Length: 305
Image (cartoon, rainbow, N blue to C red; front, side):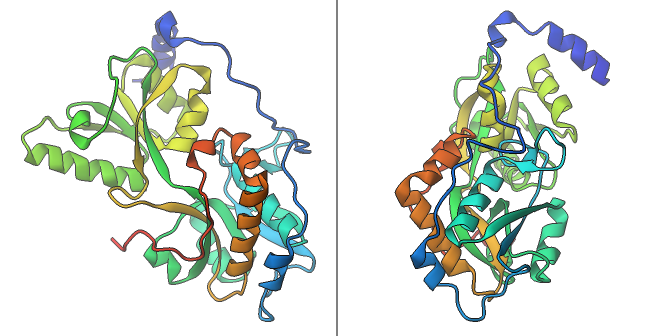
């Protein structure tokens, strides 16, 4: 089906699926409403003598852009904004350093971090045991996945894999949620249930049009992204699952292994959790439901595949 046909189909979406425009989002380069913090003495004390930064007085943080609420470019088309930059700002402030953000492709961050090209990566990175072999982690958000449907869909709840049997489900290729969905499908088929029809779309706009047009029944995605899209009322949440299903998983800031930064970053995050800045940062991007009560250094990660 062509993009033009999808657009025409979306024009026929029932009025029940339409809603008011979503609340405005600050995409200005200045980010005047971004929460800021003061240096945290407890965090500064944890910077070991071997701690090395890429630049004097600067915290150089790599992040990926392209999908809000995690990260995208501001209206100047060069300044990264979003939840990940906000968390990076709180960490930099806590360590008494100026934040410098660099946009990187997702596939490039491990090599750049391991080589010392930047100090941290804050980019919706899930803690895994394999990644812990090369990097140290400071957690800052729960990793949640959400199942979203069109607002007027007859689907009311997805609580177990069997509830997805026979549905047409959109999922990102080569993602953790795809692996979960494939396991669920195998489980359903083995139990004699109808198989899933798994759909893939590279373009987020075409993906959303497919869901709104009825070509797909559901979208299985990182909950933060899908919840942000659902602010316009055209889609709704029908189920949530841990990003490491059946295990729990956490999102974390990543530092080079043994760089001497992780414990200080964890202390910085806990200070911001305690003083409320952390909650403000998540609330700006509709991510408060994924908040954690305590940041941890190198917690158990998802097992190796």
